[in-house]
Picture (cartoon, rainbow, N blue to C red):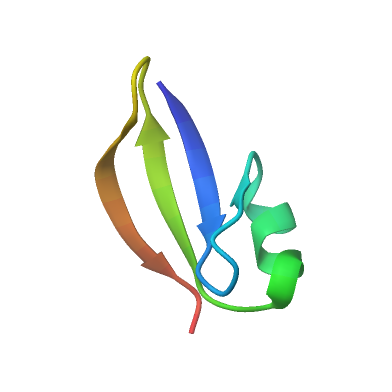
Length: 47
């Protein structure tokens, strides 16, 4: 399983938490990515 971080401002997925935070400096969301799709929503990170 791989953790993917998504910027909630533009919806773009990033491989690292730092890249997602710098994208639009907006809250981000973390997902565990499986073989087929996103699963197990971890919740919001940031403001």
